[in-house]
Length: 102
Image 1 (spheres, rainbow, N blue to C red):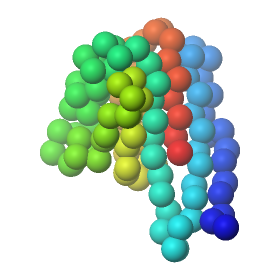
Image 2: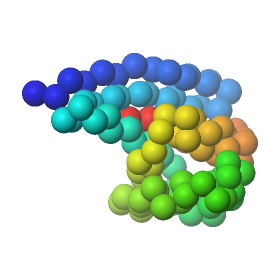
Image 3: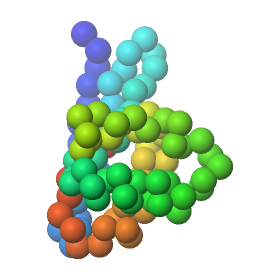
Image 4: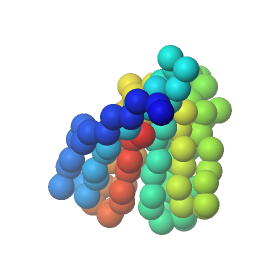
């Protein structure tokens, strides 16, 4: 059975954001994913802009996959995921959203 750990690493009531970290060890490799749930139109309109605010040349866009329209997965480092969260917070401001870091 893989080791699994989950903890809240950020909780901002100002932006209606809760970030959870779940790290699962599989064959000595750690799997980290960012899942964002929000309005589909908002997500599609702002996601690439947010990525551009991080660093358009770091390949992060190649690690993002759409799931069920309104959910994205980011297979990357926690540092990149948190940068994306910060960029999305900047873009979305007070709009309600749920962001989970797995």
